Length: 90
Image 1 (cartoon, rainbow, N blue to C red):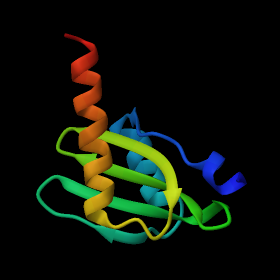
Image 2: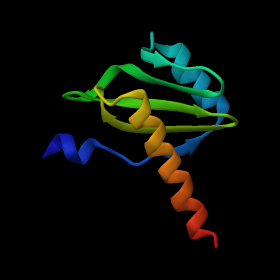
Image 3: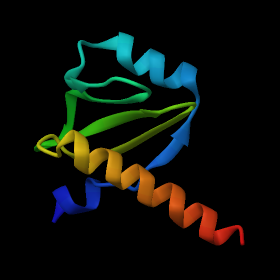
C-alpha cells in the first residue's frame, strides 16, 4: 500500500532542476539520445520507488515510480501527461 501511494504523476521541472538531479548522485539506468533522455535517482524513496527524471526536447519532467520501469514506459508516461495537459487547455 505504501509503495503504491509513493508513486506520482509526472510534473514539469526546469532544465536546471534536471541538471542538478543528474549531478547530485550517480544516475541509475540512464538512457538517452536525440532529446529523449531518462534516468533514475540512485537514492530510493521507499522500497523500489525512486525519482525518475526525463528530458523530452526542451521540456523536463520528474515523477516517482518503480526503478524497474523501462525507458519506453517512462517516455510514454510523459507523453501521455503532455497530451492530458493539452486536452485540458482546449
